[in-house]
Image (cartoon, rainbow, N blue to C red; front, side, top):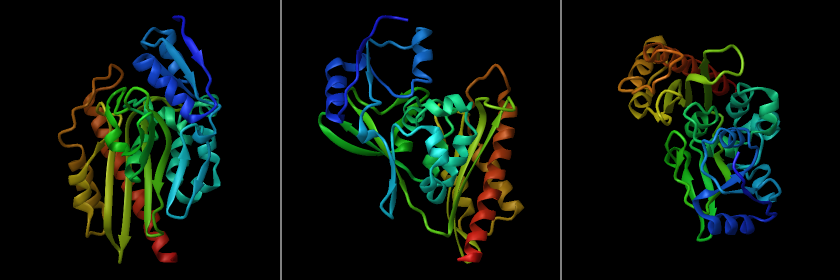
Length: 292
């Protein structure tokens, strides 16, 4: 591994100033579960590590009643165990429990999962389905960007030099909504997702009022299937409607090549994942509506 400059700022402004001064080869270090592997293998062109773990602005989970704020340094274990997350965005807790091994979840952060922009990242599809946004800080100020717009491709994001992810904002949805996430892996435990699907549904009067379908792990970045989601609106989600939406969602998908498993099989598994996610979310939202 190459020699690197190392900085450990304790304030957000200090970290941003260092990142801006050092330029594109300055890399923020949080959990390091992916970063350190890439550095050791020579797959990352970096001259400087900026360890952000001591910055309090990047930590914490809190809610103001309308939105949920998750600090970029919140680990996957913390996310899965948070009472606030389980109450307001339980799909994120469930997704975390599907990821890797406990040792990795104890170190890996939600910010790292998003900023690494891996095509099979497990938290990104449900974050998009929930309509989440990212709070980014740089020397020129702060900006807010939807998660879907932040991702440009595998390993590529809209981060500019000197910019740092501070937190993730998740809208608080009403009791007439539900979100589900389903992943398919080639291994029983801790395998990278070969296909995944996240679904958000809102219901009213026994019919779907709003829907979002997000496909993960197939292309270079998650796909938000607007047309398939539109097929659901105004309908009760019976088996025929669910199957039609799942088939429509995978139309036109250009599956990234994977030596482990064929594109045809991954599309087949993606369709099944969409169906399962739709069925889970529809069952949950109807149960909520019946008791509210």
